[in-house]
Each structure stands twice: as C-alpha cells, then as structure tokens.
Length: 117
Image (cartoon, rainbow, N blue to C red; front, top):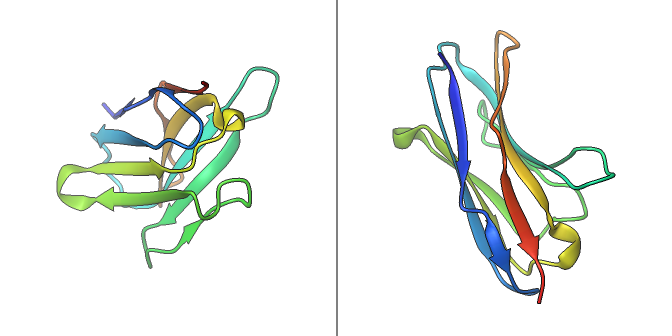
C-alpha cells in the first residue's frame, strides 16, 4: 500500500521561511517525478515545484522561482520543499505528488501553509 504524507506546514509571517517534508513508502515502480502543488479556496491546484528523477532537473513557475527549492532525500524516501521569502499569496494547502514510470499518480492529504502577520 502506497503512503504519501506531508508535514511541516504552519503559520509564518510574510518574509519568513518554512520547510515542508513528504515521506512516501510502498512505491514499487521507479519514480519519474516528485512534485509539490498547492491549492487555495476558489483557485485551481497549481504545481509549484517539479523534480525529474532521471536527470535531477527541477522546474518552478514564475510565481515561486527563486524562492522555493525542491530536493530529494533518496535514503529516506522523502522530498522537501524549502520556501523562502513567503508572501500572503503563498497561503494554501500544499500537497506532495509522486508519479511513477508506470503512470501511477499518488497524492498526500496536504499540509496547510498560512502566511500572515
């Protein structure tokens, strides 16, 4: 059984930083991509970071480029999202996504990030 679980969300002031973590287990096939996405009320889900495991490439949308960093810990089957210079518009539920080369697509339940003074 595949499990994907995020942690590290919370309340932070504008300009602050947070580090999200995602632990995954039970994935049998080789992982193709690891990603973080966010969704706030009334908005569509937006991918904020992608990591392509074949060559380590990362991709970020302009909204977070230069502020967010995705990284993987191979030994612990986890992926992290370092978020710096946070803005109120970064407030959302952040979810971890694991996609395998077989096309399996797994999501965690998400963790709330609130940026407010």
